[in-house]
Length: 197
Image 1 (cartoon, rainbow, N blue to C red):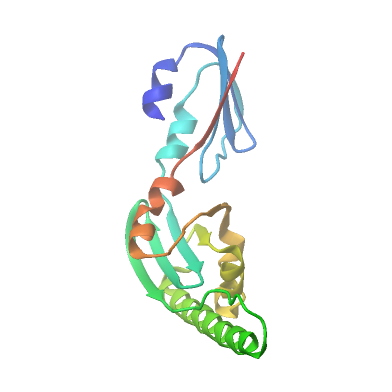
Image 2 (image 1 turned 30 degrees about the vertical axis):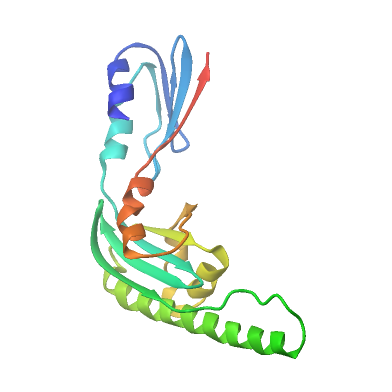
């Protein structure tokens, strides 16, 4: 972001900081940047003013992460981009059954039991890992499977996470430690949109 926008500093154009975004109206194009954790600054400049945007982009945050899918979960806490606490786990959950009949009911019950055990283990782990950080966590990153995450968040010990959840839901095919360690690359990425003037 610095490399792309830096050369525009002080150039003719209009800069509008409003509603959590920075809008740069240049002679040839308009660039809108939305920082991942918002932007409190609100003001209009008659030149390209990058300071408030770069400050917001460079700021580190304490972020809790909860990634859950049927089959595994990963819980972590990031100080900036550094993972300072984490725990991951896996639980076998059978796939869907193709045939009907009484065996499919047995299969469904077994699958439901396995899914419930995974959700309980994920909630227990999340409560244990995140509780010590509760008063300092600014944002919560959720990812994996929405239904599974919703079930984990139903645990009363985790009620404090949802109000701090980022709007963006992170796609994680299989929550493991490596996925958790890669999360900051997505977490700190700003949304950028350009259009011709």
